[in-house]
Image (cartoon, rainbow, N blue to C red; front, side, top):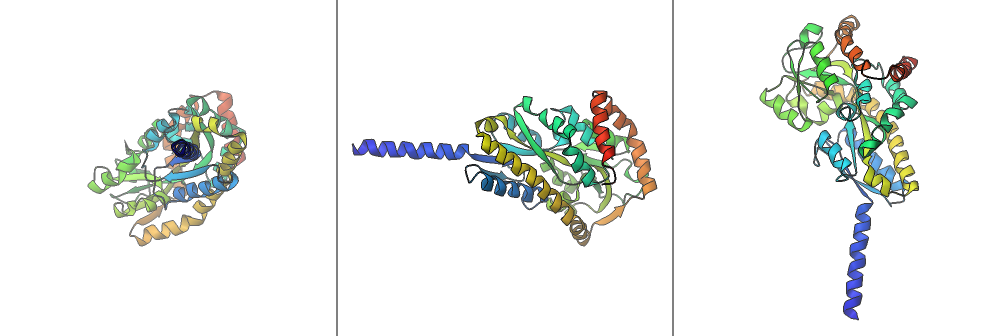
Length: 330
């Protein structure tokens, strides 16, 4: 009898542990935990726990511990990890319409970008993930992308000519950088620092916060505020996890994602000048491009934008562009 009770108690402990594990969301992301995105993931974890009364918790795995962006997509599809955040550039191979967000120089401000992501057309694109066994919950962001390099200051279109610049494995990114005269080199994010350090590449195109959090200032001299792409990203969960949640838990997790989106934007805005000051203190030269020169960059990539739009239903493109135009000046 005693042995039976002991065995039963042990079984209940094991079952309890299994249930607890099923409610833990393993969250994979590629950058350092003290980055803006790291702070964003932590805020999401805090809100999920609060909104579900502790029934669902989030365990974060920063710095690509569970794989780079592309590996995290596959892991979420298979239910190996429960959640991740991936750039729209990384997700465009799965949902090509994300490339409409990736088109160079599309957005003039974060307010404009946020308005489009929260519009009907932004949500329609997000919903296209679900047939791929992942559920897109909302958009987060790293900030506008800028050019860094070790060769020379960049102030004109000619200054970027021939620079070997790391970028994401995305045709829009590659075509855009080529159109501007650069030599784009797609690399997984975790390999970038070493490639810069060894001189295998000259530069990077990345958000300023990532330049800071990834210590790229140690291996880069010049930074120019080109703001050529957004680093818009999608926070998503595996469909396996999603289908296993109670409806009230699904609502709570989605609400937590949307609230965290507001937090994400706030800390990007609040930290922007401090990040530039920090990078300058670390020895980086910070430059801007004059409006008339920036117009030359835009002209150079115009054929790339036309190529993107030609891939999609004209009515969908028109709806997207109408949102972009309606929110100019925000």
